[in-house]
Length: 230
Image (tube, rainbow, N blue to C red; front, side, top):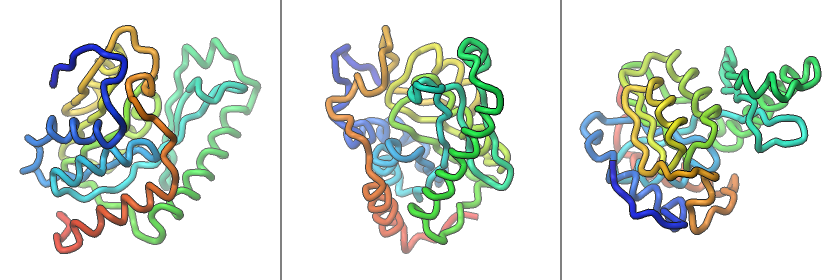
């Protein structure tokens, strides 16, 4: 793991974080990995990794389920697919005690948004086959870990040969918890105290849909002549 001198901003922006993360993942280049980004913020980070490893880039679509009246407080997350998967932070769920049927209704609302995003970002391009592939899952950071856990839960159903989680920054306790969910975990920094992902970036503007579409198209272009691995 790369060592960082403690400072207010560990990364200038998501591009810088992706470049730093790519260096830490160079040992996986020979595995011919598939890079999967969590949109939207994970895409600029993952693009730099995919470019460095000459790997295909795609998406894993997950939506956080925020608490009533406080969407930034994650009670769980849901991942799309023929059989949607979800995770719940049970301790926090019990503490918040949302209204009856609220979670199911919110999950359906987020699944609708996932379907919209898949169509917008990927059009009719099918999701990649993950069986027997090394898959690198990338986000711009983790906080509670609920979104990433949902992604990992869904991906495991496709039997990849190896799942690697790679993030620029996250809280130590969450990172250690996620380490048990994957074959390898790369996290560049685990600052203490951990206040939030954006606190460690100089620039942390919201990634727009148009940026996601553009980066996916550019990634497709630089591997256009490279056949997909079975």
